[in-house]
Amino acid sequence: MAPPPPLLIPTRSARFYENIPGYLVFLVETTLFRVEPNTIYRSSEVLRDIAESPGPDGSRQVPSDANPIPLPPQVGAMAFEVFLRVVHADPPNMEDYNSETFVPLILSVLELGRFLISPVTKNHALQMIKARSYCFDPTMLISLSYQYRSRLFFVNAFRRLVASDLRDLSYEQTDLLGMRVYVAFARLKESLAQHRAILAAEEPLFAKETKDETGGKNIKVGPCHHPGCKDHQSCEEDWHCVWWNGIGRSLLDGRNPLSWTESVKKLEAMHFGRMHLGCRQIILEYIDEDQLNGHGRVYDMIDAVSGMLLADIVEDN
Image (tube, rainbow, N blue to C red; front, side):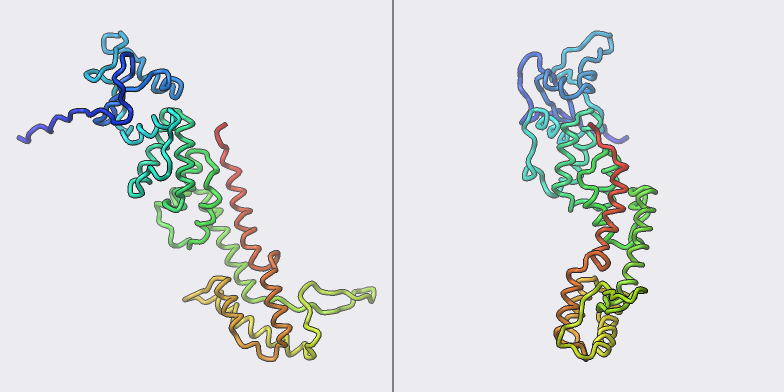
């Protein structure tokens, strides 16, 4: 027969234990907290109901070390201490949290804030998560945004998610996102892939002077050739080849695709053939400044989907 488990003797909290008559005594895991009741009652109706609940004989019990008020097992002692610090206007700073235990602890504090219906505790946890959002997977941050109705870190998390590949998401991460976010993410990735292919195949064109139906001049939008360029056709033919070999093949490489920034760097280092040096400088500056139809549109596409999803999150007043 196995021996009985050892008897755990509760220890008093080093920060929140004041031996004053009338103070409430809570037992959380194996730690005793003795605190002033009015602050607790103002901070959480749930704790007030627990503290004022009658004992087995129907009468209200006076809490003591020998007869403390036990809190449910899902409430951790470290999270409860953070709650007490927050409601006593002494919230922990980021430096107070241990980097190794930060993620599980702050998630416990966040859930405790919801369990105790304590908005200040919930908001403290959310602010801490925002400050160290890099510690969390973006799918977790998005799930927390919906679960706790907070917009604090959703946009940043969604941008991080878009930077990842759809095929790399695990089933668990997909479940965290939920169907609406997952579908929006998948459709956005498809749109971005299409936009990437368009960028790769269609180089920015030089402006050409044409005539409209009335016989007037119509200038096409785009950069103009340098005044010193005397062979526009050869310049544009070589520009087409340089673009494809520098940008097109880099963006669409099936084995090792480069980012837009890496592709542009590769383009700048290439030989531009018969292109006039002035035209080369003009077209490169145009690529860098073009934010409407070029690579800059990628951010607009991401922000549009992010804004649509963000509207679904109705924050608590």
